[in-house]
Length: 529
Figure 1 (cartoon, rainbow, N blue to C red):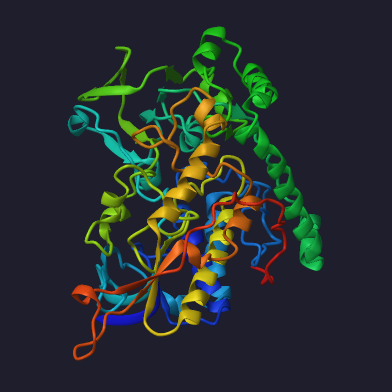
Figure 2: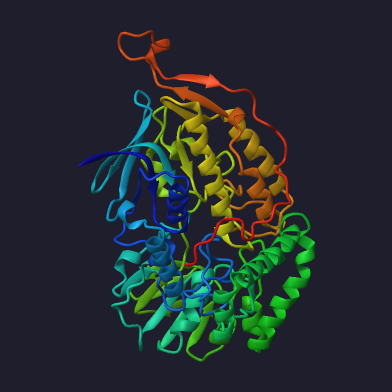
């Protein structure tokens, strides 16, 4: 089966579904959503572990064009977010565009036809434009632990939770202390006979001020949608004000650090345990976690905290880097994802025959977080340096959707068979400005090693500014930052050198810093979800 479409969207999480909605609102219906799983939802489909919930308030962690007045809690659980995404799929008529169980195996740029040849597990597609929305939290990472293959019990990653395996009465080892582990530990602690937490680096944990949203509040939001927009705007504004401390004045985070210390002291009375749980880096350097149940769970009699990483497995005996040992029946890895080395990059082959992974060998970089040089008409949602440390990724996704929409408009204006290829000089200039700003952020100066950093220690993950700045920087496509690629002449007509696609240079990229100051609340026409 071969199908030719104008746009192929890869992935059906927030990024992919958001791209699909925006395409329809731009009048584009000739597209498919390629999804490797059997349902939509992305990371909120894959992560179904006990206690899984969002650490961003519900009314901010949703599309501005699809507000949900019926969020049941201020911080929603996984099941509610997944249900929201299913509902968005239905409300905006996206089901006919879905191609489920269609894993992308390879996508190759065809310079003769100016299109992408997309091979999937269920068929082949030709696409004029590819929008890759696979997300950085989609491929679990399990460290190579010597002897792991010899473990006689059950082993799984938090993002591949085995719901058919009952943990009741089992000795369970949780490896890692990131956002997933902080939710898993208190959720399973009451049921297991023994819980051993292997902590390589302690996280900073702030109280989670979560509550049920009352029926009166939900009724108000349904009757007066403006109240929901105001709530969203207030949540957004508070987080925008916090950005300066993360990006320019990390020392201002000392006050927040004291709140986290008090949160720990209230729950953990044992000074020895408290010492093991106290980080030695500035708060914010790694993602700040929210939980009011994590510390209490660690004080329970059936919980052991090993202040060291797992280094070896000898049968059912787990050996930590400090030499301590623990017996386990189940190992749960909460060890994160392939973020700076996304597997999808090995499957994208650009104009020069190199894969995206090869192009990014020295570190990920993309123009305005979207376009990589040498990969015409290919865009990524949640690309390099678009992550956030304190706010909602939906804000960044919607900004990138603005950029995607203008990108497609520019192609229409150019007319004929044409493609846009980000100029290497523009990509490097953008990345240089981002990295210059990164130098004084808490992620660079806070004294920690985090998943924000790539193998060379460079932060290619987080955006070093406000969401309003990013919205401004991605509102329009600047053609001066792109080369316009035209199809080569057909046989019998005059061809360019070597018959290759001709590239029109539109000038040098603009070098100004992204500007701040644009509100993001209630900008789109809304369809209540």
